[in-house]
Amino acid sequence: MLESLMDFGLGIINGISFEILWVFGTTLLILLFFLLLRKLFVRYVFKIILNITSKTETDLDEKLLTAFERPLRVFFVVLGIYFALNYLPLAVQQDILVSRFCRSAIIILMGWGFYNLMGACSNFFENIQERLNFNLDKILIPFISKIARFLIVIFTVSIVAQEWEYNIDGLITGLGLGGLAFALAAKDTVGNIFGGVVIITDKPFSLGDWIETPSVEGVVEDINFRSTRIRTFAHALIIVPNSSLVNEPITNWSRMGKRRITFNLGVTYTTPKDKLKKVVDNIRDLLNNHPEVNKETIFVNFDKFNDSSLDIFLYFFSDSTNWGKWLLVKEDINFKIMGILEQEGVSVAFPSRSIYIENGEHAENLTNCD
Image (cartoon, rainbow, N blue to C red):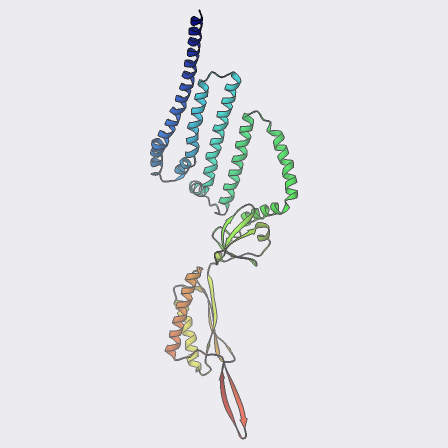
């Protein structure tokens, strides 16, 4: 009798163990299947689609695929967990919880993909500009990217909150009151944000421009909600608060249409008048015929009788605003002016002083060169 009861109990235990093993084994197989499907998709299908999109005229489709690559990988894991848990004999409330979890995960993955896409917004907005035929200042692109990312995070959080039946009206009201208190407590930060808005709307400079203010000079590398990053010519990085920058006079050297060259050329007092006039005319002809000199404004004139020289005033502009090219143009003109002086036998003056000493009936003239 005892043996019969033991055999019956072992049969029940074995039966239950087999059913549990079957359920959990099947659940594990479902999860492994989706993990395998994810690996096949990433290794083969995604690469095939990426190769196809790389042959198109625009790289917008390629950017979309790249932005959603990692979210798609996680999506297969979420699907595997969902179908695996669905196979388990769960209660109704547990099924609802699993469904909410999976829907929330899909919403987050979509937000993640769009967040990545906005991170690569440079090419994204360039493609939009080409398609819609409008110009967008490149300094706006980082702002648009940051605002779009912020909105994507807010929308994603709010949709997930609604999915879990959380009333977001109170949260929005609280954020409004909290935002007001924060604005009053952090007026400097708010001032920097509005300073950034002024820079965006007024456009005194753009990314890559060479600017100069009373406090800083360099090339604009980045502008965000709080500050502007400027790389100096000593290669140091200076971060200037936007509120300070908009209250200073800004010189944008990159927006020069031409670049000025001006100096005085002094020749000796022993230079005859006709040779001086010929030197002036030859230099004027040189500048008028030089391919790198702007023809709109050229002044070459015998200007004044200086203490130790006859001064020729030169005032003109190079077409190139690039500093390196400007220096090369200036150097070339200087060499050619030297050639004109040598050709006419005219010497460049140097500072000198004549001293006359009276000695009895005659005066002795001594020349002192500084």
